Image (tube, rainbow, N blue to C red):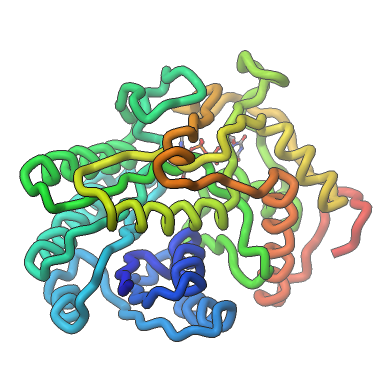
Length: 349
Ligand code: UD1
């Protein structure tokens, strides 16, 4: 199959491209490199030994995107391009609605024009009502608490209405829980060029001395140890879910949502402890106040993805932590930064 991957140079997109290439598909990446690097494309080719075509194009640039659609007949689109910071979306909702929503509408316009009937969309667990009961099923009430989340929700609604009107169209909505880890080759992983937002980048910044300490946002939740509970999923497992979704989309029309998570909740303190143990390194942290807008517990019911996509995650929390740190060490070396371990550690970096 020939697959267009928007945002294919990003943290998740690059892993999806590797899986697609390993399965023998042709990949065309469209990325504006706002939070990714062109070097990632060379790495994708190095890891897979396969060629990748790409274009430095913003999906809101309809003219440039149309040149690509005119030149290639795609079988499907895996759409990951978009902005993803909750805090930034509160400061700049216009940008978020424009890039995420308008970008998607333009993409779908071109898909219709050039007769591409299948799309896999990168959605998020943030679409679920904050009070959803865990494990969260796809049928849970949808209500997001940030402009970022509401752009995801608006796009999901758009796709539902689109497939209701066009019966040949196939949309798979993948609701990601908390992707962490890096490629097991150690060659690729998350490299946020913008200010990171999530736990793992902060944790690794604290371990490598880029930040003085990791702040744990609250230890007074009604959880196993008081810290928040999340469903961490290895980014390689997540990427494999996209391939299964692609095959599903080839066989089915309509719009269907699937959770992609591990199906297990771990607390922030359990994650820190596991990271420290498996990497034999100290994680400097202190307990701070709850972060506004955080929910206490979130983890997925993944039985629908298991049943209909034939997908199941394989990697453990330990593997997620090992792969994340291996990649971080490589990144530090690449950046010629001497990792300064600020707290006594058992292992020298
Ligand atoms: C966040 C977003 C969510 C988005 C998701 C993926 C919020 C409120 N939610 O989810 O909309 O879809 O990222 O990008 O921003 N934590 C700390 N210290 C830190 C950072 C995080 O203790 O420095 C804790 C958080 O309180 C939370 C857990 O770690 O309990 C995971 O946080 P994070 O990685 O930001 O993901 P989510 O909050 O699940």
